[in-house]
Length: 222
Image (cartoon, rainbow, N blue to C red; front, top):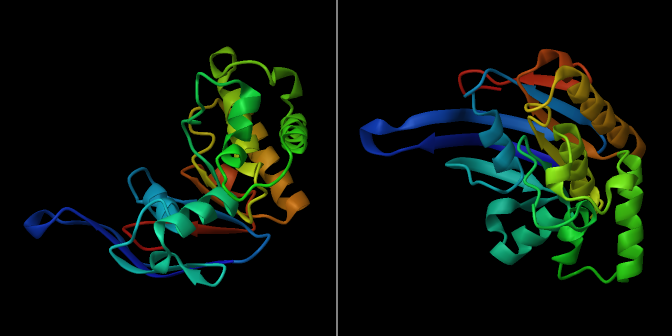
């Protein structure tokens, strides 16, 4: 599904360059659950953003479903990020002025290719909220939710367009251990039921044990 070849990422210029990633090679197969662990500042989030087309490598290639991301137009890359790749971040990034249901619907509503009737779209969003245990919170606003509930909304939002790849950047970083365990169990359930490829970035080795395969990122090397 996704292949990263010789990925380097360098920040700065001249004598003040900092090399964060130093030749990363990675293959992600459909339906696999991959964890990437490493200390804070190791470049885990940078790598995840490059894999998802949110950032560009200084050197190397990312190939998603047979297409090299760097060769795509901005419009094509936006379509892939909207339709084929789901994202969940540590800080949720919910829109405070919209309800839970509207937040979940947002990626589908902004997709120029979506031709599903709004009734069907709303039904799918409510089904996802049911799946993450928040059907009764559909008309709430983010400010009325706990941290764990916000993350569940973010997960439902990331699934609305039925992506093939789900990227999770420290999704339990702001949660207590019990709530975090519940989020990881939910992600694992999604992986098994939907055969969706998942990449989880975390500094928590215990959480990484849920994955099919774990990679360690240290000193820019995977």
